[in-house]
Length: 118
Image 1 (cartoon, rainbow, N blue to C red):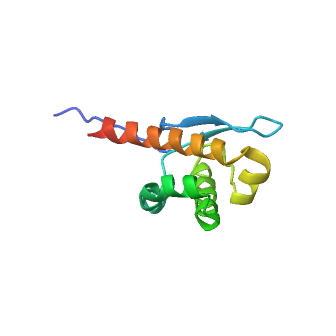
Image 2: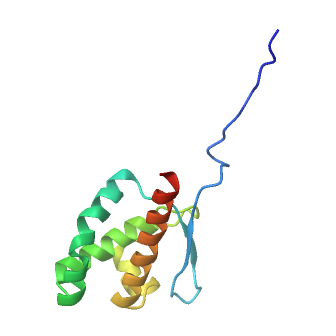
């Protein structure tokens, strides 16, 4: 009789890749960001080519779109924290330059994970 092998995968306790970001609020909130949903990844890919133009022109609608997307991306985390564009702007991130740093780090994180899978 063959030996039966039993394996278990508990997705609630499985290690997941994260990007740890320390925000610029008084408490220096640390958020462990995870990978995006498919929908957010699509939005990120759509907005990425326009990012340089938004940064250069300061287009108000474009800037708001970047804050909104960043809030959604940061809300994908292991800490159960949710963010809005307004909260990022008013409390957690000091200026658009810092927002761009966060997005660049996030893009590097996702790119690195994608390369590891291939």
